[in-house]
Length: 180
Image 1 (tube, helix red, strand yellow):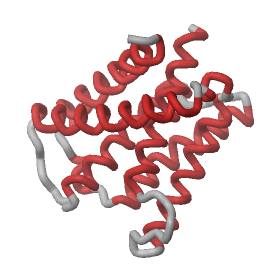
Image 2: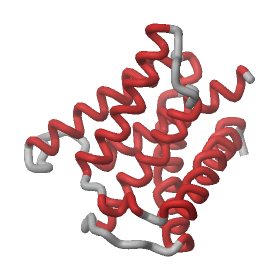
Image 3: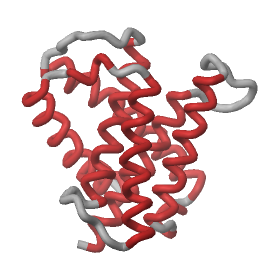
C-alpha cells in the first residue's frame, strides 16, 4: 500500500467512528433528508470553514477538522440516499448503515486512486482554502443539476460531485493530520 492509500483509510476511520457513534445516538434520522437538504448541510459546513479561514477567528467549539469530517459523512449520506432513492422516515440498523457507508467510501476511494494516478497527487500541493472552495463549487453544481431536474448535457451527475466532495474533504484531513 502506498502512503496515500494508508492515510486515506486513517482519515476515513475517524469519519466512520463519528458516523457510527451518531448513528447509535440518533439512529438513521438522516434517512429523511432529500438531496437538497444533504447539499445544504454540507454547504453550511464548507461555508463555516471558509469563514473561519477568512476571519482567522472561530467562536464555536467545532474546529475545521471536525467540519471536514462532517463533510465526508454527509457526502457519504448523500451517496447512500441516491442509492436507496427513497428519502423517508426509516430507521436502518447500525449494521446496514455501516455496510452502506463502507460501500460508498470504497467507491469514493477507488475513484480517488484512479484520479490520483492520472493527476499525480496534485492535491498535496493544494491549500485547505482551495479544498473548501472546490467543495462549495461542487455543491453549487449539484444545486444547478437539481434545478435542471437532475439532468446534465455533458457533465457528471450528482453522485460524481458527492465523490469529489468526499475526496477533497479526506485530502484536507490528511494534510491536517500531517501538520499535527
